[in-house]
Structure formats: structure tokens, C-alpha cells
Length: 141
Image (tube, rainbow, N blue to C red; front, side, top):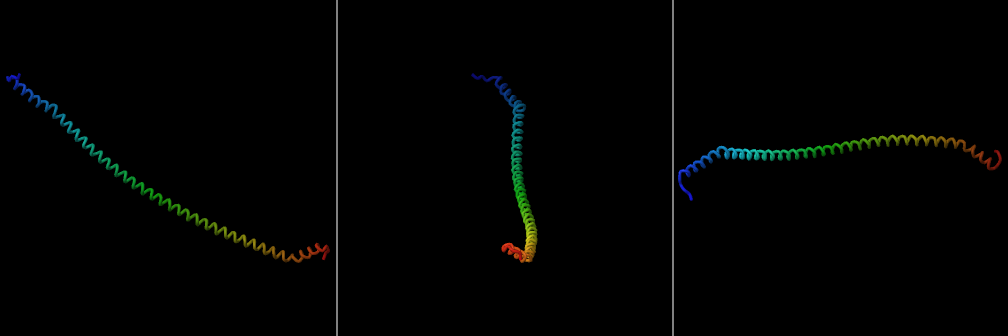
């Protein structure tokens, strides 16, 4: 049973006093700390999102620069290879010209030696023929 006497208003005042004191001492600081934590988490989340965006942008920038560098390196490699091939072809052409000139000179020398040997043999042909005829016939002419 509930009896209404002087203790009831004292209990109500006591409860109201405890609400005010607990609100000032416990609830308000806890709510403030929770609000600060929520704000920190929100700020960190925004920072993380910003870092992810920056990382993505830098990654794309790096990939673009890498593609450009590869393209440039391939172009320079192709250019160097074509220059080397042209230089090699030019050197090979010079060597061919020199060998053709040397070959022509050797052929000219061989032809002149053959002609001189032919002239010498033509001059000696009559004496060889007489000598051979003498040997074949067995008598000296």
C-alpha cells in the first residue's frame, strides 16, 4: 500500500536532485565525449576518403606517366634500331663496293696475266710444235 506522507515529496526532491547532479556530472560529459568521438570518426572517415581519392588520382597519374615512358622508350628503341640498320646497310654497301672493286682489280690482273701468258705461249707455239713433231716422228728437224 502506498501512503502519502512527508517522505514522498522528499523522495521526489531526492530523485530530481539526483537527476540534476547525474546530468551535470555523468550524462553531459558522456554525451559530450560520444559527440566528440562521433565527430572524430566522421573527420577520419572524410580524411580516409580523401586519401583514397588522392591515391587513386596518383595511381592514374603514375599509370599515365608509365604509359608515356613506355611509348617514348619504344619509339627511341625503334629509332635507334632503324638508325643501326641504316648504318649497317650503309657499312655493308661500302664493304660490297670495296669488295667489288677489289674483285674487278683481281679479274683485270688475272685477265692481263692470261693475255700475257697467251702471248708468250703463242710466241713459243711454233718451237713447241717443231719439237713435238720431232719427238713424234723420231727425228730432229
